[in-house]
Length: 412
Image (cartoon, helix red, strand yellow):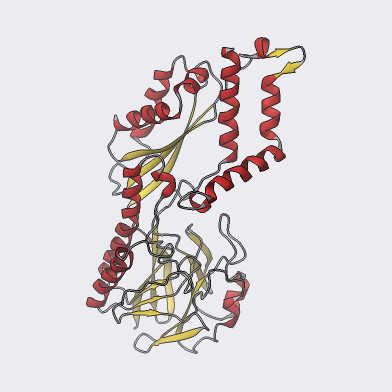
């Protein structure tokens, strides 16, 4: 009876700089940058512990051109650990580490096989009767359906397709090597090891099993929850059971929403927020957490919150977290609250001019939203990390602008 286990991971994004966090907290940004390497080390630990037959890495190992050699050295070092355990690694290039983008190289140990970027190729593992088919990206832009070119399955063997793809579209991700699940089914393989989408997803649970393991480490508030890889067990050429998730991340993002309705004073807000931190994340988690706080609702403390300014709101939120535990850092405080209903009605609605209604209408106007988004995108393009690292959040910007204008109008 033949039985083996393999590990499937993708989207390591080694070298991610976390520019968005750095603009608010350099120390937290450094921790999350290190967390990508921590996650890789934990992945290798779990691969060795599982006595895996091989490791699959479905693209985007690097986040782009290396800023320093340590990025490549760290990956080579971890692959060497697997080499010493006689565990082969099969990888290919995705849109972030396409051949045209990552030009530096560190010699990798012989256990690492990178698939060609010119055409699909097949690697056969005779002892296991496994055939792995794959092709990487030569250029970052890849509009072709690569899966349609993959070779027929090796008859009587366990066939794996290794592919970096957006499939038929995934929220928040650009279109790369587009194809459909039906295209993958048509190849006749037993397992498709996908990369590109940063969310864990079982596209198909069987015949064939098609899996996005998600990325190893969350990179922004849009990527919340545990991150890692999957473990798959094969017996006599058939997958046994479900793919098992392996959570290995070293840093994690989460969000807390809190409503100011009914609160009498600002200290009450920070007290309630502190209570929320007590059970917001697992007590024994090995990850440091970055929290986004969203303050909403209508209440009498709104004006005082606006007057505090962003730095003071963030500092108070951090103090609230520190009163409960020492592994939470505040990523951002978003103010979406408003004055108590009718607070401004008499003073700001005169001679048919209703400022609150005017601002609310402007915030809901698609043209206004588009102009704000365009302006923020222009700012992002001039930032060191580029627009991809800059969170526009048009709705939050408009909500805070509306709150600030109403508070200033009230004062005058």
